[in-house]
Length: 116
Image 1 (cartoon, rainbow, N blue to C red):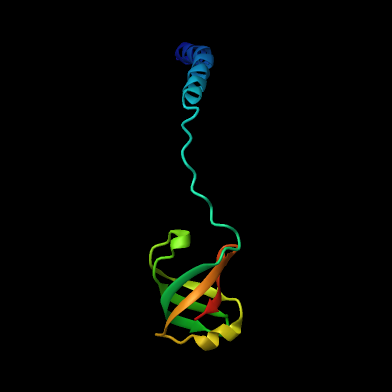
Image 2 (image 1 turned 135 degrees about the vertical axis):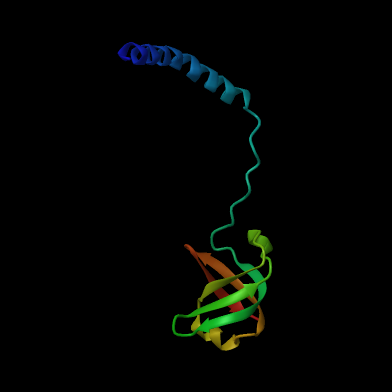
C-alpha cells in the first residue's frame, strides 16, 4: 500500500511543472479576449423610481415602497425598505400613496433623498 501511495505522489510531483506550463499557455492564448466589464454604479449617484408606499415607520425614519424598475441600477420592480435622509420627507408620504422619489446608496443601505 505504501508503494502505491509513494508511486502516486512521485507521478503527481513529476507532472506538476507540465500542468502549470499547460495552464499558463491556456491563459496566454486568451489575451485580447477580455470580457466587457459593466460599469459599477457611481458612489453617491442619485437614482429615480416611482412606487407605492406600503409601510411607514416615522420613529425609525424608514419607508417601504413597492417600486417599478430602476434603470440606473438595472433593478427589476420590487418592494424594499429605504431609510429616509430627512424625516421631514415622511410628511409627503402616506401608505397607499404613489410617489416619484430619488434615492442614493449609503454603504449597504438605500436612502430616499427627495419625494415628489
